Image (tube, rainbow, N blue to C red):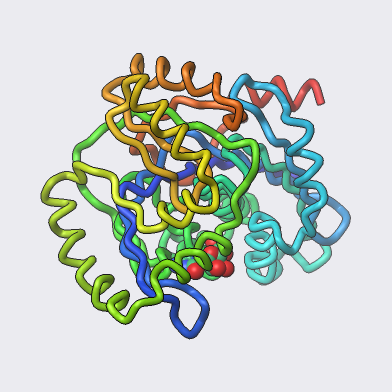
Length: 328
Ligand code: C5P
């Protein structure tokens, strides 16, 4: 048996500008991604049986298993799981590399620490970690650029999770260029008790932005982005926030409570419903996180920093995941 373990970060969009829906159903984006220290881990193993087996273990920030979310993930058809689709995308290459179609059976265990349908690219991080793990396990020799090409076909945020750090995303968010900037951010994240499907938020966004000036406004975003970058992304921008907040008004209360507790600013992360609260340092982020756990709509909180490294091979699982794995 061969095995490889890889991890990939979740992301927060420091700036997310969205244009009108295109004929392919997607929206053009200009966005600044910051990869953050909360990571998904994927353990890949060869197996005798052909095909791809997948099992999810959803972990809570206290280091235990979230049994309810883990059970929900089991109901997801495998073909909808981005880790499964990442394995499917690489399997033909594995067969070409001497792993005959039958010996290229693989079992994937996905340790999820990012919120499910939370706007932090958890599914994309699963795909990114799977691509890196299988590239190693099957000795495919693919470069990060190769993996980004494969990843972009799986989901718009996969290349950003592969590259990590700070990056600018254009097109669907899948064309990603690294951004060289010195910065260090602390965030308190508030996870919601319910997910918010990304397509619903984009559809609501369409309703709010149906005017004829939507295209022109977006075209100005490139110039706005330059200004954002010159100011070192001083303020968070998220064009999807009005839609996410209209669908989930309770999220505004979370943001307001964060400001009262000392956060400098807040936004929904991507399409939400995770609320990302920027704080001056780790101690402040911990105070804010503690305060937010008292709110009824907040399931959990976590303190994270960024920018964090992109998808990478790991020599093993971190201690808290090893404990979970051993106690399962
Ligand atoms: O690419 P991904 O599968 O992550 O996107 C999920 C959904 O989000 C898409 O089906 C689409 O409805 C919406 N989306 C979009 N424009 C983007 C990215 C995502 O409309 N640039």
